[in-house]
Length: 423
Image (tube, rainbow, N blue to C red; front, top):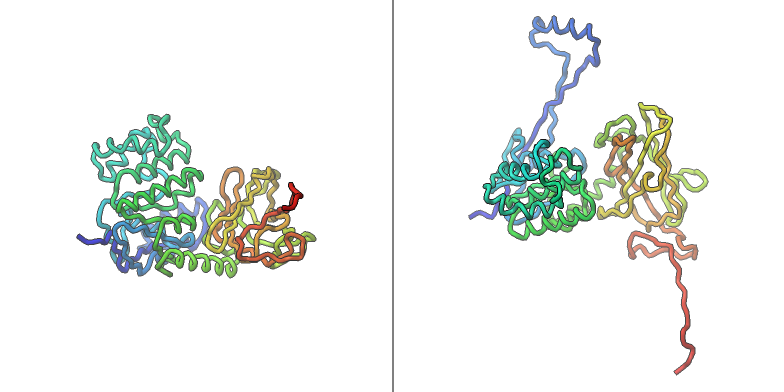
């Protein structure tokens, strides 16, 4: 029996993108164009181009292996998993998967909103090729893991996104597929459930089944996966041991954040009515600075443009700070400090005041997001970097040893003699 679970050879996926050259037309122009169409003999104002989401992808996964697939937004990760899950067909090359595949590519894949949680477990199990007896045998464990016992007979359309995701993950993980394919589902759950998911995926791998795991959470990838693949622009940029792959990924993110002007970045998501165009670092006096000193008071300005003007909006601006290994160090957001009622103009900036900057020397990569009235308007992974130099953080004139971690803490020492008697 072969020990190969997945074999991918020269895989490629092309999409045809159509551009309408004439732009928007009035209703009168559309009606005239409609009457002319039978006589145009194939003429069109539309121009199309080929876009390769994947190109020349080849790799092999052994039975029982946990493979991490990482890369920036738009690198082709989800397209690859959809091909492996038989949701879409490749344009060229082929992918062979040996065994039953359980896929969780987005929250509630395969769920029917009008059916109850109980009914969806049986429906999803049948889709995965499980018998009714197999589903019954795993049913109680699925429900307990998802923590939805009280709502199991409620239509899932009434579930919160967290409940929906917990049940979807639980079904996919417990119905014993030979290959489990997971795409960034941990971003939806809370920290407690994320830990449960990571533990479950580890147990699945230890049972001899194969796992393909896509995530922006480098700590989870490093914890679960011994090997990894880095995708860039639809191609394999690097494949090997997980620490090496993560290191390449973080280096590429650092280069992208440094070289790409944020205003022209294409790898952003969100409604787009408000978009970040520039990030500026200032000292306490408002002077622009390029690097930050540990212990310095720093003002970070997030300049934006907007096509929506609001005197007062419910705004949450947030950024995550990651160390060079991709571990999140902290999140700074306007919601936690109750600074959400903000005006929005055609242009402007939001400013974060970071007093006594408490990171050691190094280069830190940050993800940036802006939410307006409950809608995500702009979201960029690896949006910018913070370059930090050693500073006089403790006010003693002593610089900090970089080898003692990333975070600096304000603290002090004292002593108390409790016995003066000498032996």
